[in-house]
Length: 105
Image (cartoon, rainbow, N blue to C red; front, side, top):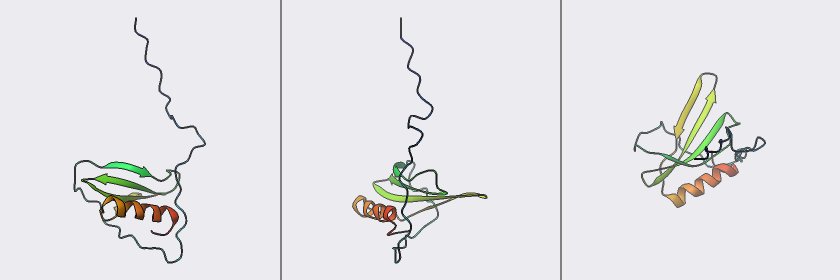
């Protein structure tokens, strides 16, 4: 007789958990060029993301051998999505860290 599979909790992460929060923009921060989303490939994998508790969330995405940052701004009129330029891994991971530290926006 087979044992039924264990129930998967609806939210496997404990309640007080929050994702990474972006630091406030620092004076003189680097400006990221935000573009309209481009359907350049059929698959996009989100490698990292910021906390969902904020109106603006950022995702570090991987597609077609390049990385880019997707920014989603949620408001009363719906969500607006923009993407950064696509860069090689080393350059985009550095930009992602700058974004998290408030050194880029």
